Length: 100
Ligand code: SF4
Ligand code: SF4
Image (spheres, protein in one colour):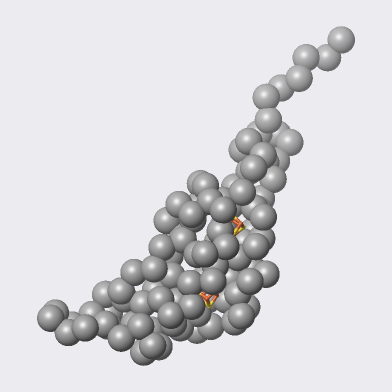
């Protein structure tokens, strides 16, 4: 990844409803960017969490700084649930160049 570029990863939870059962993006990501976690809104103490119940788990991207921008996760997702946006640094934020 280019120095100074900023990555944004958006997960559409309406489309990625069973990430624990799927995990395709997790398996393919070379940067280990993703994590699946039980949805705290669905969590009931001492109750097992059913991976096939929609919304029972959430896909997060906590290690976003490890993203290499390969877009493999976007390509592999069967539900078109992921967007990876890479913003290149603006010219004015780069170090000034000496002229002459
Ligand atoms: S673009 Fe590549 S490195 Fe970044 S999250 Fe997706 S699979 Fe991982
Ligand atoms: S591949 Fe798509 S549907 Fe599967 S866990 Fe990742 S974002 Fe969710």
